[in-house]
Image 1 (cartoon, rainbow, N blue to C red):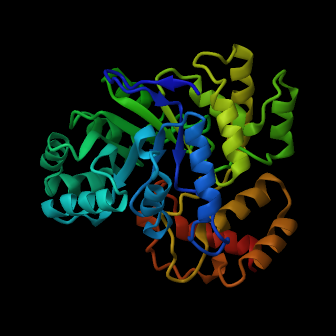
Image 2 (cartoon, rainbow, N blue to C red):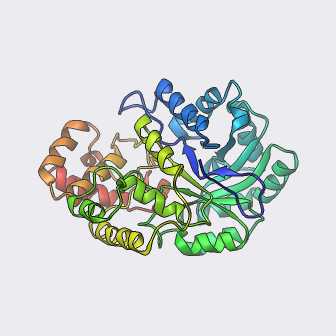
Length: 377
């Protein structure tokens, strides 16, 4: 396993972080974690050198933090740097900051959080947190030892990112970054802005919710196949992020042991600055083709869920994008209607509860109407 450090930090962090947002589930229609498989995956990763474990208050209906504590029993807690996130949207007073942090410490069965993030900041959420005394909370939590390092995860525009970066003495930040999203949200400019100010960089969505890994459209797959590298689509995407020496940790939301094995194998050989000009041109060509095909920029994060009218929103967009990318509407329509009967896009009544939760700021209602037009009518 390779390791990197945040600027001005002493701890060495594994370049691969284990993200708990997409742990394997018992079945497709539940948030219940497949505890046996997920535990084996996480412990295998730690045994192979992964020392950054990332969870959050709402993951898996609130079960992710207690589950993580179970996996980190028997001496595993001492082997890792534990990261979790304040549920920023639930804070309505200064007291709430401490309430949730103390609850998380109990759920995680630990006396401190190594890397604590304000979760999913955007302009409005940051304004609310400041109103409720976030600066005093962060200073206090670091001083009393409950939190070792303070950061935030981010979903908004570049100007908002810079404003938040300049507002506090952050230890690190977590941004969405992959070869498709260099000009989205914080993007390449935001990454450089934070790093130049001594702030550590953790990357989420390196595979864009799996959309740039696995089975690719045939014409894009041919771009990679022509390259003199025996790399999978996932390996190309991960190596592209790790090629940047300013990135310390790349979070991968692994959902199977096979994904865990592949991620570990790539992380054990990836180096910064290792991609050649030819490698980078291959990625740029694939990027251009992807951007021409993707209609809805959904990363399947699930923040829009549950839908009060039972629409499976991320899967609706996944099937819709794939139908258009692979130019096979009939097959994807048939599979969509059979797989999500009772949860399809035409059940949307435009109540609007989902849209404020979307980190990508997708016009979900209009996009679901497009899905419905293609698949349900």
